[in-house]
Length: 143
Length: 136
Image (spheres, each protein chain N blue to C red):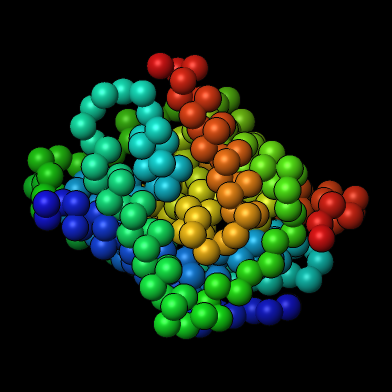
């Protein structure tokens, strides 16, 4: 087991859970980032874009503040860059809209309600992730 | 206004959680998905932490007659386990495994992650836009 960080993982996860509970308790919305973003991009003229914008603003601004206070929080290492990364982004974008959720929407919010759709989606994207990493490592795709 | 502040607070806490758990780090995510290699179980613990809090919190919150600053709960209505769900999830998992990023961390990193995040977000937002445009 490499780089295992159980305490910060549990703490960070707890905060994510708290965020989800607050969003549901105040606005009645699922804290699924692909859904929140997709709704922001959507072509329907319903006026529910303001809360989405506020959420995304918090999602972007708070990390900036945190990193200012504790710079090592922004340590990251990309395993893919350039065009392959752009294509991966497109695959994520398409897949999350088609499947109606991602790790937050299905993985956290849906599973917390024991939604059958979310359980199936989560198992599916986990397996897809495991297989993809296995194949990518085998073919030396990563940096 | 209270609703907007709540949304901002929720987004902020979410971003903080992503940062503290290191889910913004592609290497950490791929480390978890590298299940037969140098396995890093951290992501599972992030999920556990999030699920426990959400499960307990939802039990309380969803028992209220309505949300605090909205007239109703907006729960997903789809019930079928269909091709779109499975295909979409599989597709998402592939992109996630390739990049080590998903929508939350990518957006949280938009100002902090440099050019790489811009590439990922460009692809992600572009594809989302295209998908929504086709469905309009």
